[in-house]
Image 1: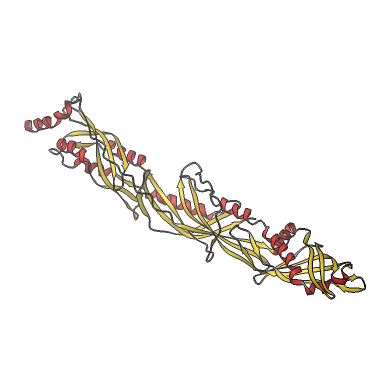
Image 2 (image 1 turned 60 degrees about the horizontal axis):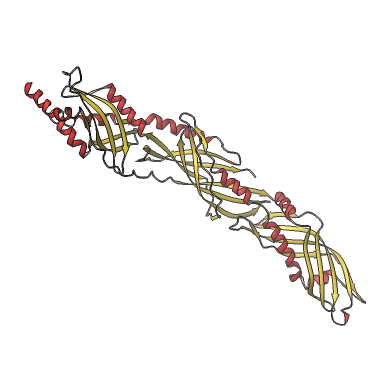
Length: 467
């Protein structure tokens, strides 16, 4: 016994003489690995515009004057003539959307002023005609989110006589002989009116609303946050009396656990990307984060509940922190070693050492732990000399036993909250509801904030966009 006590005093003396404290230098920390990349999801939305609404939109955009030609060279029954022509709308546009084509019928009044050439150049005539423009076109969406059309068709005119001196002709005959040059301005005018139909503000509203966080859990408060990456488009479809536009927001989605609504400012509307097909499948990442501060406090509480004894010395821990590094984590501990025969604490030695360990996660049990705990090199030089004679490896092995965190209940609760939260429709302009079918195998990482388990949830999503 005397020999053992003497040995202990010899080992403890270098620590007692400088003030009963030992401080190991903090080891070098390399930046932790980035969190796993979130999976991509497609949120498909179909915008349907009935042909009656298309007609109203074209009516609202189409100007009263649809053609105004000056000094147009045309062929007439008595040679070449110069024509002034004005076409004015006289009624609403009739629209139908069938078989991939948008068909328009537009009534108008035509006023023509004709001047003969050659020896009849002194002669002038004017006349009016009632007409109907009948045209069809497919529609496409341009990179500026505007509708594109290429109308073509025919113009039907009622006979209206034009008198040039002793000669008589009619507007229909003049039109038929030069229809290609005369009808072109009308088609171009109507194409321009279609391109002014404002789809872009509606699509911008869809894009912006996709950035709005959706609350999906109460305890803890959790939010579905989407990070849209692109906006894909299927070109407009025309059938069954309506125009349909299928859009898909490609986004990275995750569930964020925090009390306040996350900040997620919308990005600018991108150019449309080609979309192969619309899909209602989705995948989001559900992260479960165990912050280092909470994990360290749990381990410290356990060490205080069951104090460690080594060679009859009581080890009293006052601090335990977990510090992330690239390939492992560093456990910073502060404790005092107090011999039982020293009630006054004169020989108590207090200090700080560092240990390194590798985080692990068992998805089947929901348990996170720090394994293979060992002293950092500088700490080993201090601790092993002091402890080797009494309890080899005791400190590291006991601390490792307390670095075990069963988070299965919290993970199950978060999954169920997300499942129930997404099932209810959320949003106003863009309404989202989802049915989670599967939770994929989790990935695990330790980040600058804590131990992170990522669960991939997949299923079907329903979205609706209100015009």
